[in-house]
Length: 70
Image 1 (cartoon, rainbow, N blue to C red):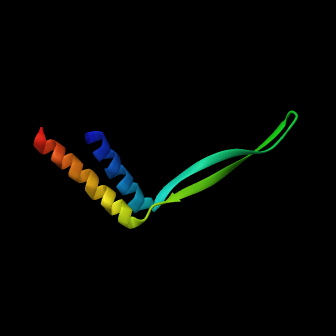
Image 2 (image 1 turned 135 degrees about the vertical axis):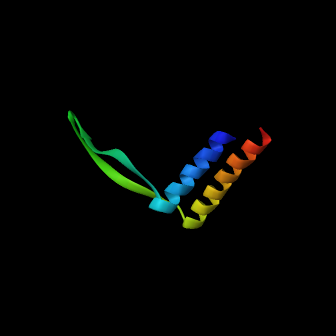
Image 3 (image 1 turned 60 degrees about the horizontal axis):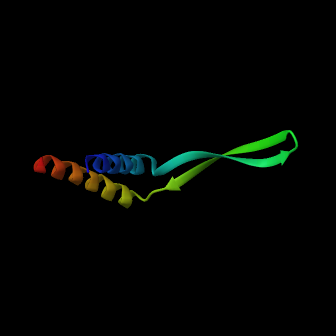
């Protein structure tokens, strides 16, 4: 539960600060014989601020509840 709580807190902070999660994707656009051409695309997975707040509150709640029961 502690790991899930920490993950939710981190995801909530990322969602609030950056507005989403960005990642790079490399794909092959041309592969002819010995020639290979690739393209790196920058993709963004948008996360609504409301979801960030809910994730942050849920993660903190899991961490607090875990500490009280131990």
